Image 1: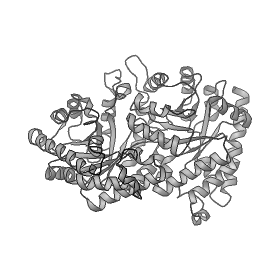
Image 2 (image 1 turned 45 degrees about the horizontal axis):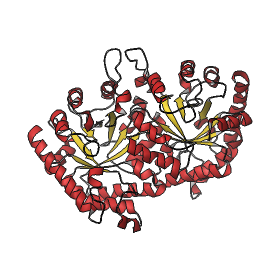
Image 3 (image 1 turned 120 degrees about the horizontal axis):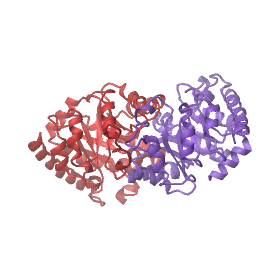
Length: 274
Length: 274
């Protein structure tokens, strides 16, 4: 999917919501545990009810892997389901991968050939040759970790070099030489607040994937005020507050309602800041 | 496995070799492709022939994931095979994971409860709370990326802060507050050469996992001269130069021979530097 196609979806749906599929077998409604593949059954219902209000889905690989082979099957089936039923959705494998070149090539094969998602999240610590193998696929995206939403983001991401450049700024500057805004996005946590203004200045045209609204406490209004550009430039993710909105048989309806609530707020933000 | 148990194995076998199982379906001998699970079949033979000469195995997750569900099955079966037949081997999932706390918890569950390896490689970019969830398992290890063996290691790992401390030093210093040398090891690439001396000063008692000897060009002698401590403190990995030593029906014998060659060199190094 191209940047223009993604923006077209955002305009059509008046939403830049990404629904995070952090599906934990220990948290899904009990009645689903009888199903052959409870995680997949849960995801299917969540997707059917939230699809009108979002433009992207982000399965979080850790949750699938924790179930081993069964989990990988649920992940692949979930991606295939979205692809088939909702082909306009942008699908992100939230996997935080990155390794030496020949290994990153294999990860790229995993996500772009075997699982066929649109984008994969990548960690920058190992530098250029750990990232570029993911860029050899037409129409596919790297979403590079820049400023994450967690407390640990303070440990290394803000370290200043001798010219005052912080690590996240260096990652941003260097990585812009590896790929354009048509192939790379950045993770910028909603909890980073006003920093969005600085990051947006350094990357005026890139899309940001924004975790941390909802359970982690980030403010949608702040993210939009400081982070939105003329092509929206934001995919705001919400996982737990949508998919676990209700733990009974009406979980999917509740998830749809939460997604719709966010979509309405997002429509207003697009009105105000686009 | 404890540090003492690992050192005991090293002394017994006169080897600190880790065999990297970067098993690529496109590179294994043709006659194995008829097997039900060619990757597992390949690994089993490699393991049987190399086990006398090594103390650790390191399946590289990317290679398994690239085959989707089939690959995960091969990974799990490989780990189970080592566990059952060679219970004294240290098993490392080379996965380069790391995410916000609740997600790293799931990755820890993946590798320590579902797949039951001894250690997992973790990337430090997201800081403390992305690493510590892996430390909640008795007898299990985090192997944190510090100085990697690839060219991209130069991009960010050497960035100096305003006091002259380089990023890898900062990662090393801070992470030592998260866990002791009984639960944490560090990845230090063999290609880093003389830097081993500096890293060893900062972490006198830790084990280092050392990739980059062999196909990537690092020198075993240099690694040992500068990196060995009184409990060896080194696990030197070799992947491609062992497992792809021969591409015919005698591949496993050839792998065993390569592993034995390295073991002989290592015995000499232990003699000289321990």
